[in-house]
Image 1 (cartoon, rainbow, N blue to C red):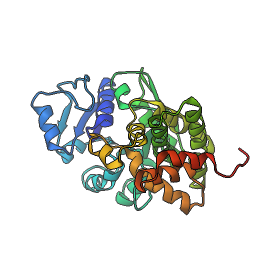
Image 2 (cartoon, rainbow, N blue to C red):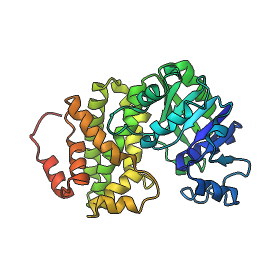
Image 3 (tube, rainbow, N blue to C red):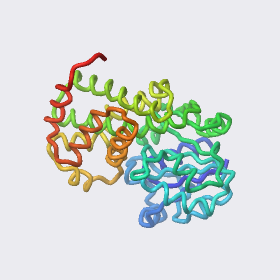
Length: 331
């Protein structure tokens, strides 16, 4: 299958390598001309994936029309805040018959739309059944090194999801399919907020008891909002919900957990973000998650606490105390 990978960050690069191993015809588009020039000069290693060489025959260009020419599947691997603008260009270049697989785990700030909702708005000619989401416990660093990983591809039409399933699946990458597109998208996005909270616990030096309680109550929070928005409860107990949540909250690879840990140690959010070379989706999603909770009348105490700590200058330790001393209730 002819595949265009849109974005040569860590995730786009890792999946491009995976697809090449599956003998797919892959072209990669990268928006940063400096990064493209680096690859074309012979430095065949992504700076955010050190130690993972890129094959010489993996073409990476700053030419979107070239990347999507005759593509049968387009893999969107740009951050959620860049999806709308990138899609606006894609819609004028790619065939409306393509399968679009998005891997951004976020909610659009301002509109509060899920990524598939942004797709349908910006690219109305693309059938809704061709808009898919790949999500689950999957750090690019491990996928790029061939470590066993399982994910979910979700779409409104399981037959279209199954087409993508066969393209991505292999000896080290197992793909399940799900028709709960809403639930899979929300699980992947909302878990990043809880991952920031998990990092804050690490930064404060809290232990396993704290982390266990946070993950459990965080999953409750995600599930309540997700079901209020149309997702199915069982989706949040699967790979794209609980699986992704637990992995992100515990992993040394997690950018969102890292942000929370540094803020928990007393550093400002601006200071932490300034030194990062990759995007922590959960920072923007915290705004969106708080607003979605309020819109749907779903209590989001952990999300509210993270928002205050990140953006309102609240003391992280005091926020933990406030959570622990809330009104007592049944589980």
